[in-house]
Image (cartoon, rainbow, N blue to C red; front, side, top):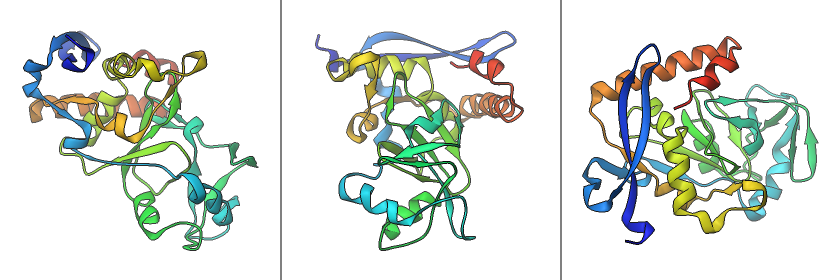
Length: 231
């Protein structure tokens, strides 16, 4: 059976004192009735690319210069469940506190609308899939992907993307595309293919609740405890 005919079967189970845990086992695609590809249950958006990436520099500032400016991040700012803003290098330019202005000669209106939506953002250059949920406006640079309009609870989808299950599936499916040093170069079409387990709303809500607790740990600075909670 070729690898494309196999999926990593996600199995959720309660773990005493730790909420829900996620494990996986390989099953044949004929049992995939309880899965949907990420693109089938959400909208996946590509990052800034090519000529647009260079043009974006014209709308960037170091520090917030106007009320309409929004924070700007790149793939290196994204960790599982959290965005770490700060000193950032973009297109060979160094920024201590990067912001993006609504200059539509440099950034399209469509991208600006996307940047102002609550959404999941996914790092495009990483050793495991790293995703965070942003509720407030945030602009992203090259190789950062956005997931919007989720059919399921967005925090449930966030948990799936940050799980060991999703990273193992991705590494197995696209092992020929691994880069030196164990890095993954994630692209939109590959990200769209990740199988998301379609569980009932009660289970989604319970897992979403665990993610809320995890985000609370991250917000309080307890990153060691948060890292230990990764599925």
